[in-house]
Length: 306
Length: 306
Image (cartoon, rainbow over all chains, first blue to last red; front, side, top):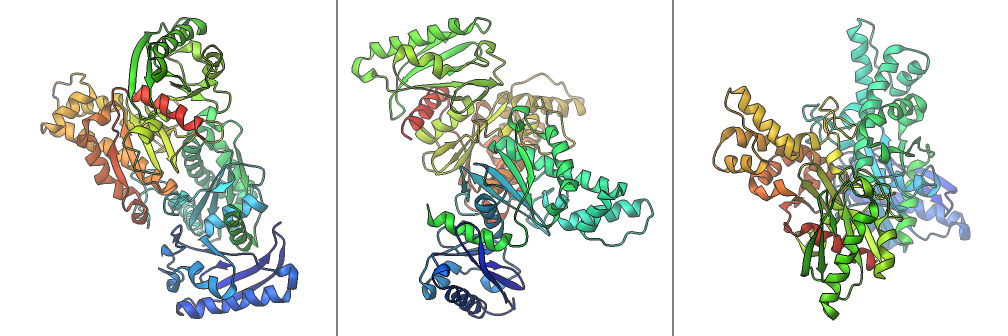
């Protein structure tokens, strides 16, 4: 189950990452906890029944935004989009009715687990996964396992401080990667560049700006060059700290492919020990549309098999 | 064995971190590999023999500067102070004669292992260890184990880039923590502050500057405040990434105690998610004089018991 602000995507996933069936359950984010969770449980039950033996449930994996406490599964913060989930534990409340273990993790860890099990991470033992979207999330994989830290809050890659006098971030820190390389940051940077040249500055999506960059628009190219430099600074620090085999870029913006990746690769040597950078792969995620469902399933499988 | 540029410190260490005996073997860094290693081996043998059954060797732990490749134990870079060791593997060459396994690690990882086994890290499952000295090194402990990364090069905490337009670092990156919080950086910062006020600016040691700060010298206080802010920025990022229980500051400069630690603690909330920072301990290392010997032994014990 992939919980979002307006819907929960529910999928029946097999061990190899095949999706036997999927459904979308609309969510009214103002509803209370039970009214949000019950239709999701019914949906899971329905999907499983309809697929008989092939659909036999062994576990339920749930991905949500926010900080999820390891052990209890409680969402202890950062889930403002679905207030009813704040402070609650989905594993505790969903487990009973369905009779299988339930594992919850934040959506960025889920996405990392999805890449590890079924995507671009399969060939690596260790990597950082970065989602570039409205926000910037992350997941860390060491030794083929998701690394969650002491309380489950690890991998806040979007909140690496890259400039002590940089932009104020909503996390409380300054100069965070998220302030420079999220979707809204890319959109604002391109607009600013257009305005400086006294050109019309419509609000475009990151994808549209990427298309312009691909078409030769020099301000769009500059935008991704600057963004890529910030990402390279973050990845250089990350790699100097963790000596990983790869960095995998996911999320909507990464679908622009080389427009995003090429500047990151080009700037990375400026921020890394050469010996640590040697042979590191900087690549795009493989999973896209169903990444949320596959990731939620993958993290459950991983924990089930520990 | 703790290898340095001018000597190797050799100690006979028991499982509880007791030092039964220790000796210093002078090193002529211009000598070739065998001439450096043989006297160290003889020293180990001599120490063990003299202590009879209590001195029975079970493993040899070696700490050196540089990047040490996991598996082979080869020093693949960063050991400029003892050129003869570069490219060589101490475990390979020392093992035979003494008949016990030999484990090599870089000195910062050793120091972290020492704190974990015998020092300030005993009560934590996960922490970052930072040595503040002429350079800045680090070690990462997850789940009571030293984390070495894919090839053994992890934990280069001194080479986190904290400012993309900051000072050029000798690692090739820019704005690295080492440029702002190492001993020489502290010395230079205090001098610069004195010069700006047209005061005499003798070259003092970091310890002397710390003494002045403790005595109320406002420029010395400012120096540690600025240095502490850089360290806080690095630790905030580190904690947002790794959700650790503690950060332990070691190395010569950390012996100044609260003069160094207080500004770090004070600035840390500016660079961290409150939920991630809650309950994190920022403390000084416990081991000092014999940290090198105890650390080298501790990392060997840790690997022996895996």
